[in-house]
Length: 290
Ligand code: SIN
Image (cartoon, rainbow, N blue to C red; front, side, top):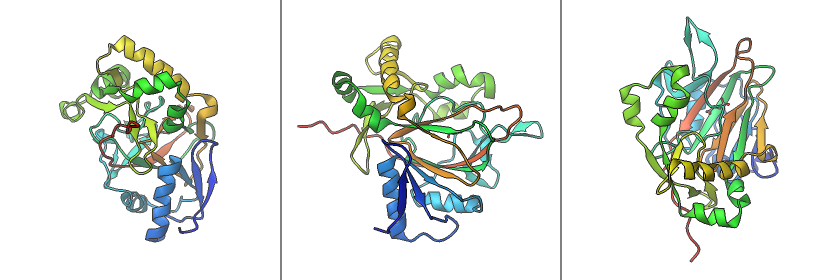
């Protein structure tokens, strides 16, 4: 143990790590503790990192695993393709980052065959009012479900369909996907409940926006189940809402949490965030008790 100092962010999940400087070398024992804290807490806050640059963020993130390049290549930071820019800022008539989306709960890249393990999100510019990021624990949500629904979900697989979802929600705002982007995101089947590969804890692995149906169920039957699950997972008292300060870094575990961006007045305020996304592995079904 490295003696890392942590404070809880929410009664059910989340921790702030105090006193870490990501511009300085972090020894292996301390990093192992950071990694364990992410796996166990789901969301980790490290404040005071306004002085670090894209290289520091990439180097720190890469200690968790290989980094993803996002399918929306137009929003990668020039010179640092590992950084996905999330922003409402327009420069020279063009959006410099992904904008307008992410306002509904999701876990990053859940629609890929190997969804992201986690993301490291750094606040470069934030509005005075609004623009928070809200999180829920899908492990806590799994525990909170009624027994019969939990048992049913243990045996279900969900069909993620990114192109179907994008065409419905984002194409009018961001333009259509290219044929290459569509080819990278075919429909994908994942277990509705996954075991966390580091802690073994089961968590719901579902999305209100990308899951089109459960295997063997119609879209209408699937929607009814999704609505019930999301009503349990997404409640004000189950949320941790992070109010950003310049230089905050939040690391979230996409295997056990979901997040969403909160609204702000995009006509007057600027928000600029840099995200690195860590590759994950194929979700594994929760082990059934024998
Ligand atoms: C994201 O979904 O990666 C971004 C969330 C946010 O903008 O707060």
